[in-house]
Image (cartoon, rainbow, N blue to C red; front, side, top):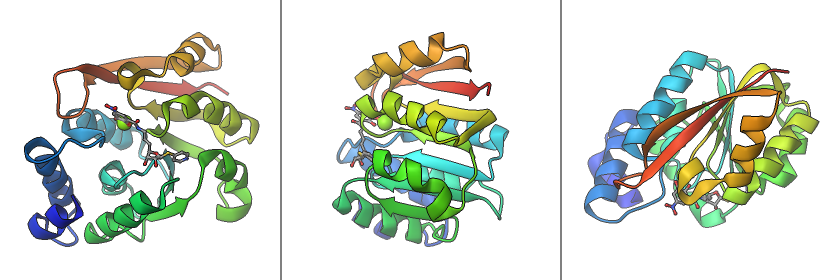
Amino acid sequence: MLAAVQKNATRGDPRSVVKAIDQFCRQKEWAMNVGDEKGCILDSVVTEVNPATVLELGTYCGYSTVRIASLLPSNAKLITLEFNPDYAAIACQVIAWAGLEDKVQLVEGASGDWIPKMKEKFGIETFDLVFLDHWKDRYLPDTKLMEECGLLRKGSILLADNVICPGTPDYLEYIRNSPRYKSQYFKSHLEYTKVEDGLEKSVFLG
Ligand SMILES: O=C(NC/C=C/[C@H]1O[C@@H](Sc2ccncc2)[C@H](O)[C@@H]1O)c1cc([N+](=O)[O-])cc(O)c1O
Ligand SMILES: [Mg+2]
């Protein structure tokens, strides 16, 4: 995938990086990027929220990191957490090829360890937008952890990938029944397939 980006995308042009990855995943080898269809929904939410601070859980190869960072205002900050050092190394190069390294802080480690350190390590008060796309059984515990750490403010947006496939039943049940969130489901398809999947957008009500 990285070779495809370096071969087919233009340095400093995020859209060409996104296009190169989507082409690679459609023509050569499926990969678990959020993809072009759900990616358009992600883009519209990022544009609507126009966030100054963004947290991404699950960088993988940096596809959604590039999509999000390319839409951020100049002073905005995107922190992305990745557990697997091999993925982190690839993502770092993909983000650099897109010319977005100044907007992105890629942190290697587990969300559960880093979420409690966000304030002290990165001077973050609260996140305007959180994109959840990591281990599906971590969505709920990490959401509760963000609440406990005071990282969400009235109006913070959580956007969760794969709420249908592979599915995050405990997270959906919690977020849709909690009086502290207002949720909306964006029906779509699993990246590069015809299988149903979707994004759940939830506003924290404080
Ligand atoms: O499993 C999926 N995603 C898990 C993603 C996990 C990513 O996040 C970290 S884990 C971590 C842990 C803690 N903190 C940070 C990162 C992994 O190293 C990986 O980079 C998935 C699967 C399918 N699918 O069709 O099977 C489709 C998708 O869109 C998916 O996102
Ligand atoms: Mg996903």
